[in-house]
Image (tube, rainbow, N blue to C red; front, top):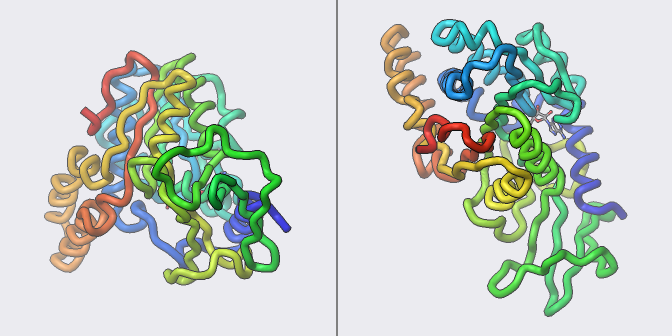
Length: 325
Ligand code: SAH
């Protein structure tokens, strides 16, 4: 028997070590190159508003194939060469397999297992679909008592003796409550850092604006929902991100926070459609309509535009980051 977060950590470590995750699901940077380009420009504008520190860390957490950062760096190189020259690229990635994929596209990067080994420098951080892969705990209420979910033989087992949630969610609350302890620890660590030296971090992920409602654990195998508890390591396990709790943890440690905003709204404000149109004009008609369709997929509310959210964590006193005003 294994606590759900330990099961999920083990399953995802095995999954990311042995699979090409992008066979099982696709992500925004893989859908359109403009996604990474405008996030690179977001970082460049944030850097300028911090007073152009040189050197500055450009960090990505959970870079996958390295697509977002490759697109970001290309855009920065042509539009904001000063930022391009000042930035030092650092990647947070635990999968040796994905590190090797990233090294092919981003050979100048330095890799880390977590935030704590990053150099002490001003920081810009980007993370897309990183928090949703971190292991969660789940608590179930029966009457007035809370039980914690463990996994045994591919099934949930509820154990009453686990330490109770404090404080217990009151009033109207779902039957199942989720807790993403690593995400909250990252929010606190970033909050500490941002309070001590200048920086800004942008997280995009999927989840509701208010605290997570109910059981959101899911598995995708070959693009289809699968049983999250069977054959650990064969599917990607994710859970919705509780953005309100994430932002509150960062504020508690001293950061200013902005959002969450729907992804579609942020991308539109950052110029997704203008940049896509400009790029499309230089392409064949088939490629141009594919680019426009990709931008719509990222931004339309009934597609990825509303379920996905963006939240920014910043040093106190730094101007409102681009797209959040
Ligand atoms: N950001 C990419 C990939 C998302 S998949 C994209 O949008 O396409 C999740 C990424 O986070 C993978 O690179 C995975 O290996 C990494 N990851 C998962 N758990 C991690 C952890 N605990 N620490 C560091 N990286 C992790």
